[in-house]
Image (cartoon, rainbow, N blue to C red):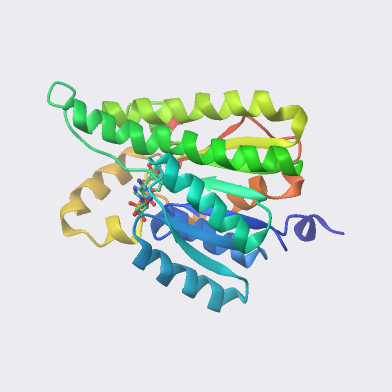
Length: 258
Ligand code: NAD
């Protein structure tokens, strides 16, 4: 079998949190194109249903929507239950749901801080932890967590201390789980995107000046497209990455190399 065939995800069962739109939707589409069946897990269940339908129709694979708030253990456990009832096993978890709140550090409220840490860091812990328990029992699996280049650098001048701290936490959480589970065939890696244009950011007139600024600051002189995260995630989900665990993959047009 050639390398491209080996990279396919035929028959794999995957969930994607924050999969209704943006990066999650794009990566979920790639997983399905590579042959996987999946669940789009999101707070916004109406959008998740639309995305799941679109993906299933496009690829002839199975795609369902599951409503869950990744900050709530009871939601995450119910989601895992629903997922296993539908698919029997869990091969890959893409723990991707996240938000950003911009505020100067001196003005950031504790509520804002907690909201960002809850979704971006505790949400990844809850979903990766629940997925890991299933995978350990079943004898293996791959977990991919979404961090950010903001885990590595401070993307001045946007003030976002909670976001930066949450994403740095995602990378250390990823490495910790990877080391603990390495001999039990559960791999855990993270991706660190740079500035990415999602439908939402690109269609927002108020964000246009910011996108110009981000493009200018990036060595590639443009922001990235969510599709540019697809191949690394398909690689991490599949069996050809069998010796890759505890790693973070930066995809940022050179931003963190400056
Ligand atoms: P997005 O806002 O387009 O999509 C996020 C999705 O997560 C939405 O569908 C939303 O409903 C869902 N969500 C939010 N809170 C949730 C919760 N508590 N439970 C379940 N679902 C929830 O965002 P995006 O740009 O696609 O970003 C996805 C991930 O990538 C985030 O973790 C983000 O921090 C990270 N990231 C984005 C960029 C970028 O430039 N877009 C760069 C680096 C990292």
